[in-house]
Amino acid sequence: MYHVDFSSPIHIHFIGIGGISMSGLAEILLDRGFPVSGSDSRKSELTDRLGSLGASIQIGQRAENITDDIQLVVYTAAISETNPEFAAAREKGIPMIRRSELLGQMMANHKQSIAVAGTHGKTTTTSMMAQILMDADTDPTVSVGGIVPVLNGNLRVGRSDTFLTEACEYTNSFLDFFPTTAVILNIEEDHMDFFKDIEDIRHSFHRFAALVPEDGLLVINGSIDRLDEFLKDLPCRVITYDTGDGADYTARNITYDEKVRGTYDLYIHGEKADTITLGVAGEHNVSNSLAVIAAALDMGISMDIIKNALAGFTNAARRFDIKGQVGGVTIMDDYAHHPTEIAATLRTAKKYPHSKMWVVFQPHTYTRTNAFLKDFAKALSAADEVVLADIYAAREKNTIGITSEDLKNELEALGASVHYFPSFDEIENFLLEHCV
Image 1: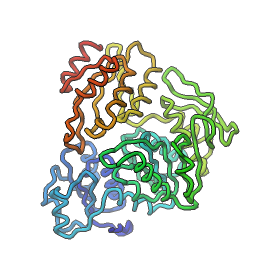
Image 2: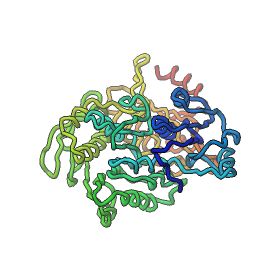
Image 3: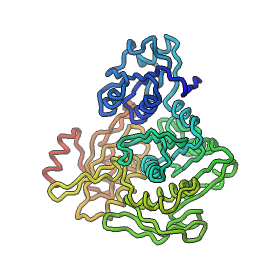
Image 4: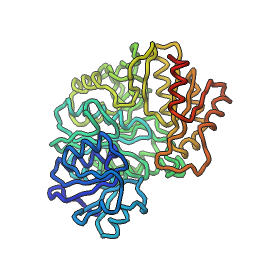
């Protein structure tokens, strides 16, 4: 594998530079003085920003974009070998590395690197940790898979030896990382177009945990199934957390305000340490906050800084994101695309003041919809009314024959009130007529 010398800038080209993670890595390199070029299928705020910072951006992916002065090409798992730029780079003999490999090399270039992994909650938890690190004046570099208010975007370029990032398990990307502190929030079935089963997923997460050095730290959810088996041969220090008893860090006496923001007593090794109040809603964020408290205290950050950061933290975009009110209807946006995430979001929404809960849901990928069809129906049935859009294909083709009609049928079998429309215009018109 090609290794980047970050003290010697070279011309790096990104295939798919407009992606949330790729754009962040490109911006970090631009800040380090690297000439950067890249292509994407469409313009966006992210490509416009990179262009304003000096990157050469091409809309559309063509072989001629791979010029002879390019010294390294970075690509994502979504790029196939038939991509014209990928094929041109290979023909010219230009070194190529995956996005995750570049991110891993950036981590290895920092003395303290924190990676947040898990089937759910990575973006929010990474954002929480970013808030704490910034409030503690650690001047971190942060790469996150969402638009975060505290960052005014999806990344922060710092000048210290601290690097914070999400760690995605899809295609085993996180196995290219070099964490000195790793956080594992949960391990559940997802990305079944890549993984064989839950044991395959557990194996990958275990390999990720094993990347933490002996003097490093693993912070892990104590409710993960067969945890003792998972931890038994890891060389690093381990801190467990859970909203129930039995873990090193626990939350007791949890209460919620009118916006479902949690307050709880923090217990560390069975002793009350403090009372924590969160600026974001939901029981799942109580759990997420325990993980970042454990990691931050281990770094030597004071409890007062941690408490104030968590109280002032606001969610990343599309994470229980309250967009406003129209005609007395409160509109929220959430990226939840797995049954467990949907169930957690709807549990939180049910506690929010309302008389009727409508859910508009667009399934994400054919394989996920097919694998969790009954689980999706069960989670969504918590709503009073469900409106379904067509499945978002993302990187996939519908070789399974699954459609949103199948999900509608499952919901109807559970007695749910459900509506399906193939276009967003139809959904909008339906909601305007029946909801507002």
